[in-house]
Each structure stands twice: as structure tokens, then as C-alpha cells.
Image (cartoon, rainbow, N blue to C red; front, top):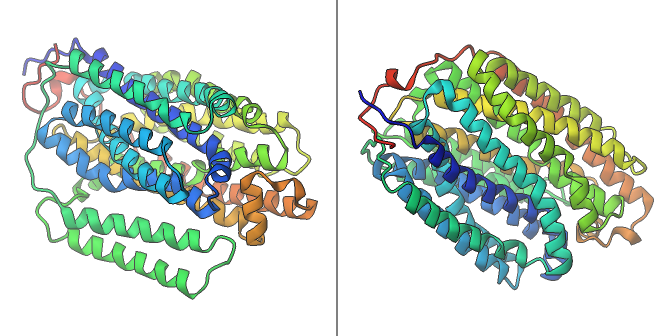
Length: 486
């Protein structure tokens, strides 16, 4: 097979732009939740769904989108994703109610799925396995840069322009990204596999995740009553139906044969557990800084910088290290370091200084920088060529499922013992009238959420440690059709 991969760095520039766009959006939106909640007279459940709705839609569609990319071409899907993401952003900025913005965030999620579901596959198509860690590291730098830029940018935008502009900022970025991809990757030819789509599997998995989230959010402030338990039962029935349906179709949305590879199984499991443990951390810390410590939006945004900054600085080192010695050691060490960060954050009190918070965030950034690039490289190195979209889509689905459950679970644990009125006052940013006992109750619940995350992080570290060593092949050794990249 003759392969020219001289344009591989152009591929990285396109996927990095998508990663940067998603990173800025996710951090800015979380930062703006208290302001949006107050401006739209929304409640906590609606605001939780502003975050979870986007992730849910991305989760529901990413496997199908990965299959579409494998079949019809990933660049075309990626370009459409930029446009839909920008459209959803514009509509979100025009929202006049809580549920309106939730619906428009669903549209954003469709675009996000079209980008995320193909970015890893595009990189894997363009790079040999012994260089993918470096490429994934560059994408991780973009996520880190977005995390550094977004708090400052978001704080300035919210303070001086208003919350609507945190969504409008995505529109010019999305338009530029489409033009850049269209011009720079017009000659990119990809490997393709034409298979049927598993509509039933996608619908059942979406129903499982959605019902699970509804059940958890229904319990916030009121506990687990008969209705929330009934919804939880329905979610488990949907999950059982999903597994049953997947056994009967020729092209299941979950290609379970990939899980027969120990590296792939352990790497995707580690990704799911890491997301479940870590994703809600930023969400909780923002409310701690603003509602408990009394910092302004712009002050809180600046104080969050240590985590994404250190993550972006260490991401390329983690990628290069995995290219040389494999993913197991750096990824496992990364998760364990994140566990240490969670322990530090679990010791927060109402009177804790910002320096203590910054220490926890800094340690968290170091751990995430060492984990993400090696783990991504391990996932894609254990995925056969021609199935890159499905392989990355399955991993992304599990990771996103962990993220969205993380938000719901963290809210339920952190605010579960508080009166509903106090919960709303806290998250609206009107907590100055709350008693010290209520604030202490929230911080205690937040610490419990961090302790739960520590346990999940330890299980994730075990999964990472037992993954084994992935096989390394050069691009010329990989099987597949002729690919022109230059």
C-alpha cells in the first residue's frame, strides 16, 4: 500500500479548531449558569438540563454519526457539524425561557456529536500509530487553551456584554472552521465501510440515558419518591432492551467485538469512569466560589485557570510519553494524581482559602494532562482501520454518558440534604441571605460528592492499569484501502 500522509498536520488543525470551539463553549456555559438562571427566571432543573441536554444529544448521536462518517466521509460530516453547532449557539443566545435554551442546546449537541464523533477518527486516519499520541496531545492542548481562555473571556463577556454573547461567540468561529476545512481538506480521501444503521439500538440507548438523568434530577431537593424510582426502573428496562436488541441486528450500533480487545475494553472503561468521577468538578467549584465564597463571575473565572492551564501544558508530554512507552503507565498515573486532587477538594470548608482551592485545581490539571492523550491513543490504536468512527464513537458515547451522569449525580449528592428553596437560592446567586448552616450543609454535600468521585477514580485507575500494552504499527503496516492525504 502506498500512502502519502504529508497533510496530516492540516487534519490536526481542523480537529483542533473543533476541539477549541467545544472547550470554550463548555466552560463558558457552566460559568454563565447562575446568570442565565436569574435572567430567564429558570429553576435549577432547567439549568442542569442546559448542560446535560447538550451532552445527552452528543451521546445519543455520536455512534450513529461515527457510522455515517465511516460510510459517507468524515470531512463532510465534520463541516456540517460546525454549521449546526453555530446555529444552535445563535438560537441559544436568543432564548427567552429556561426550556427554550434547553431545546436549542439539543441542537448544539447535534453539531457537537458530528464534530466529536469524527475528530479522533480523522486523526487516526491521518497518522501512524507511533505518532498518534503526539496528535492527540495537540488536540488536548486546544482543550486546555480553551479552558484557560474561556473563563477570562466568559467573565468579560458576561460582565460587559451579557450572557447571550457567550453563545454568539461560537457563530464566527463555526463559519471560519467550515471554510478552513473546505479549503484545506478538499483532497482528503478516507477509508469507508458501507453498513446499515441500527436505529433501534440508538433509540433505546438514548432512552436509557435520558430516563436515568430524569430520575436523578427528579430526586434533587425532594429525595427518591415513587415517581423518580419508577422512572429509574424504566431506564433500566430500556438498557436491558438495548442489549437484547443489539444481539439481533447485523450491524449493531455498539460493535461489541471491539471489547474482545483487552486494551480497547480497559481504555474505554477507564474513560467512562474518569468522566463520571471528574466532569462535575468544575461545575461544583464554580458554585462554591460564587455562592459560598462570594466571588464575582469574572473573579471566579480567573481563579479557575490553574486546572486547564496545567492540563494543556502537560498534554503533549503525556502524548509523547505514550508514543514511547505505551499508554498504561502515564494514563494510570494521571488518574491517581486526579484522585489526590479530589481528596484535597473533599477537605474544603466554608472558610477555606482560595490558595487551597487553587492547589486542588492545579493537581487536577496535572493529572488530566497525563491521562487524556495516552488514553485516546490507546483506544484508537486498538481499533481496526475502517472502524475508526465506530471505535471512537463508542468511547465518546461512554465518556459522555459518564459526564452527563456526573453532573446529575453531583447535584443530587451536593444538594440532596438541603431544602428546595435553599438549593434554588444558592444556585441563583442569592445565597447572601442563607444561614451559615445552610452554606455548611451545601459544602458538606459537595465534599461528599468529591469523596464519591475518589472511589470512582480508584476504580478507573485499576481499569487503566490492567489494560495491557497496545501493539504499535507503522502506517504502512496498517490494513486498509489506499488513502491519499497529500
